[in-house]
Image (cartoon, rainbow, N blue to C red; front, side, top):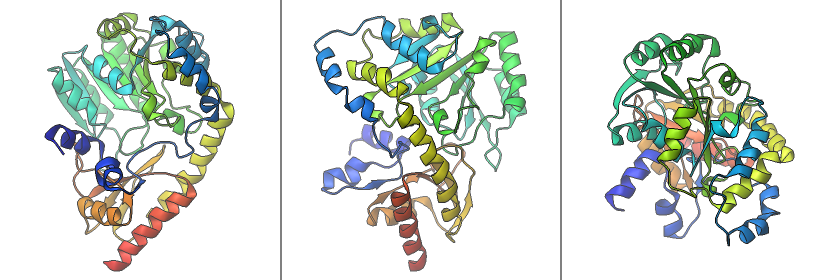
Length: 363
């Protein structure tokens, strides 16, 4: 594995290709937070439309695609001018961060925030969460006062916590009054049941908010590479678009937006699944003796702190049982006492629990 691939693997966790596929066997991947229900049938049933469209250049303005997004978001105050499209949420994160000279990051959080900020030469200040993974809102505000923007996950990766809207409001009002920007990464928001904790509604009143979303996680389509940003700050939207290459969205991503976001059966089934398993798996993990703490989550992954054990050792022991987990030591603010487990379907979750019990018995 070359140094660049090692870097990517260290940021994004388990590598099913190096650890499994290229060695001739399939691994059960609990490091990747993708909807286990799989791809919506509405996409598969219309795949020939995408094949036909592959012969054509996409509409460079993506008018139909944006109209389909607006239908899904169902907010009359969101227009095509308020949306920027990306080749995955990763492109949107990268380019919105590039628009600022300094940024506050609430950590631990998705490592790409810091990587992108440093790539663009941004000054970075960190606000560290409490031991219970709660945001320290006063500290965020203080750091924000000396930077141009702040970025926070909602729900946050790696712990699955949501922003407390009441406690966060002074930060929003400060940003609005000073012309600064709050970037809220909502890549996992559809897992948070009804999505009531989204900041989509706040866009109506506050120009300072920039929301990032994607089809990757809830809709189980990481290979499609589609993400989008939403904001009433049209100048910021335009600045990002100016930095993009034309035709950055492929015809199959367009197809996914057209059909998958309207698939109520798939959406409801996914929400029923997460409601069941988000209650089941954490309780099962709490019974494992070498897991000291299971952090409350609002989406499809669980952060755990280990006791008299380390994440690297547990990773290797799980790998021997055909399971990949997420070592969390590369999240700023965490160490090798932390691991993260994705939430899968009941059968796969039980396989994880049984593997952990086997490890527990062998200690």
